Image 1 (cartoon, rainbow over the protein chains, first blue to last red):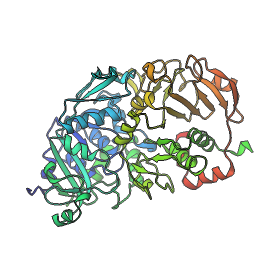
Image 2: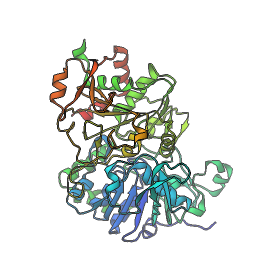
Image 3: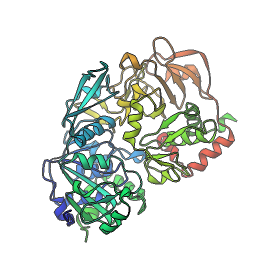
Image 4: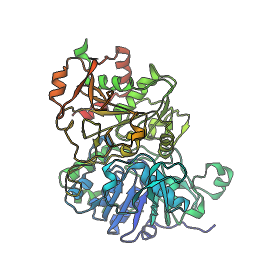
Length: 273
Length: 253
């Protein structure tokens, strides 16, 4: 095992301009918000973001001008509203939006995780989504060689970097996720580089006492950063709940054309210690 | 007293009625009405249903709902976790019986749009995206689409973009899967040989003429059209208990 514990600044520098990036969690839960804020502080540009159902993490990066392209199944703030920066920049053609659907995006990540060039999925046929020229990877109708069933083959999606916020990790990159996993294990296997931000560092011995509780083993992980409150204002199960009031405030500031003030107050000035 | 029953409660009850006992049911993102409906079904006529939360808990005790349908607090007392990608695998096996999906537009064949208003390359409005719609619409045995604002801007002659596939767009082998549309005016299905939308029941106080007038295409009427059943006070109490903050009203504002 090699020690991969590092600082947030160092870990964020793993992400290069123009990279294909995916984030762990789903909507407002275990999104790697502090890492995302660091990417904003480092003024990363031209990222392509891919995920099944992201929310504020993607919208913040879009608003801060870090993003060129989006591929998502759905990008919204659930019942709180539409994703404001995503909507504005997509309608103004400042970013390229290529909607996917949840299962094909997961299938693309799964293909990469399995070392396969593509993976077929059912459903999908007949949707206009198939007509959208793809930004990353792509779709192709195929026939199963055994049954002749028509399906959609999804090209592997291999992110340059997957960033995953978790509850516990050790200095070598062993990870323990508590509560739902979402597609985090698949993403850790699919991406070329994996950055883990963790609420808490625990000793390697703790992992050895209960190996069945290890979600991601160390050899998949390239950097670990101790990042308390690293998902805030999103939730981190067993540590804190989503702060829906803060998320509402975000929506209101963007709606009132004050996103710059939001960045100033919560992102640029709030360097983590 | 029909006029005392509030619209979210009536729709939730109609949605819950689509679940049968022993069904395996999943809800997705941004789904307060489906989450409440699944809970009502489980606490009334479908105690043995398998409840898969979008928050990934299996058979959780959903004490209350949150602004996010994926809030991990919804997984309290779950028997285990089942990832969304695992639920999608189940759907590919044909073993996910019921799914609830939304729509910004819908046409007579049941094609739904959650992607864009206007042209896909020049969107007038960028919508959130269909999430699992294009994947689950054709292959799921019973899909329930809920729409809280029934008007001819939502029920349109032609959707701007086919996100979820209606009966004229899906492969032949999925033509027998059921689609039910529950709006704030009535319950619609496609149980006719052409597989086009028809009114199955009008909500109390609504008429066939009114619903047809507020629909942008020639909406058929089922031969046995009736009135949508209303929830009992016990069911209404359950709904209010699980949603003390009134999150269910969000989509009606």
